[in-house]
Image 1 (tube, helix red, strand yellow):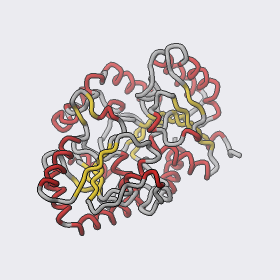
Image 2 (tube, helix red, strand yellow):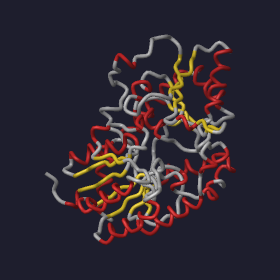
Image 3 (tube, one colour):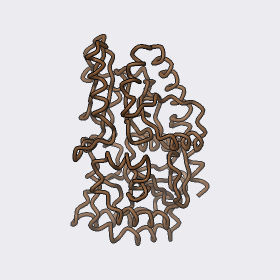
Image 4 (cartoon, one colour):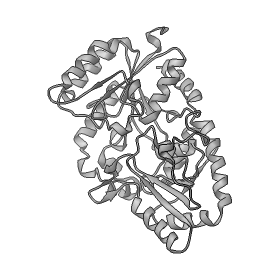
Length: 373
């Protein structure tokens, strides 16, 4: 039994595993917590299809069904949580109907005092391309395969809608935004019983044992390599590891692109070191998954964004090994020569996970934030 509408939330599109962990924890606390997904969301990123309330196919003919469902059901929920642009309910979805209809829908929600929460799904959900080009001297946009598809007309319209309708904009803390009603919270979270160094690996995911040092680099979407560009700096990672192997270091690079979100942890936990990205400027899900599993993690941080992150979330433990495209070889070489450093970073990872990534703590804080809207 749900206590009241005040304890009810509908997530429109999951943020990888995080949304499912919030759903799980909120239900334990007596909430109604449902997840709605449109079927253009990539299957392998969907953490648990059995826990999804409904799936809608958004096309020019059927998207009206989604709008009608929302209008018929939103009143059951005090909070509607959008992951990604509301104008298309997420960057993976079509825009034919929603482009013209989303503002009236949001207006009706607001009239009935439904609170709208917004979590950006990427840089163009928070900034215009014009603005983002200024960061790191354009290096991020310059290495992005999606650059030519980034439409500032859509970006600006989305930001205007967010300014008008969102009661809460969740900020990760890296980049100081100028969006109304933004709050930095510890959103990224894990069930630390599910993500920990001691999880049992199913036989079909076991990697043959060897004495080689396993360096893992993965991408959630093949589109990270697009139009000859790669936002993670993968080619630099490949080159650095190949050079180390040629110099006699007993290591290997594990490049994984075809494992589902729910199963990726079984590969990650068998690695010795995880490399996230060398260009984007802050950590993503790959880094935090590795941290939760107690792995040393390499990631590039823009200096200003790192300072913002530490300040915004009051971070006292820094577990990340920092490197960029020019230093990755040297950083890897030093770690291979000094394995004690790797053990130290593993300990920091687990400390960070328990302080900042625990869903039991973060869900309680999330509820407190919602209660103040």
